[in-house]
Image 1 (cartoon, rainbow, N blue to C red):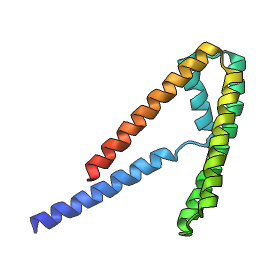
Image 2: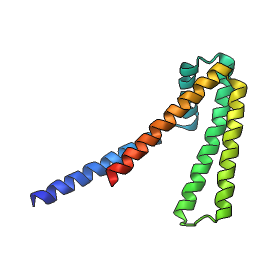
Image 3: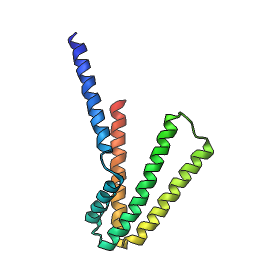
Image 4: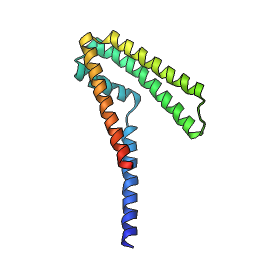
Length: 141
């Protein structure tokens, strides 16, 4: 009986924790996310006013595309429809084209030194995300 009560309490607390984490990701509007990204990059890369303005426009456009892709992915997931290999190729190809275009736009906005630092910071974040994903996977198995 005691074990059942403990199990129920743990399930309730885990559910509440999971919902809390999910809510944190959706608490900012697109404009707020963009504003925070610009300010963070201004601190990291010492951006001037013109760079901030150009970066804000670029990030606004990128964040809109990301939200659209996220919604499309969720709709696909909800419908249980599987992509064909051609559709998957087209999607991945478009994603890579978008990344190339974004990087080219960043090169237009940032100085060479700022671009190098941005690349370093981006690689550092990717490494941290890989580690977190690896740690999450090992905890489950």
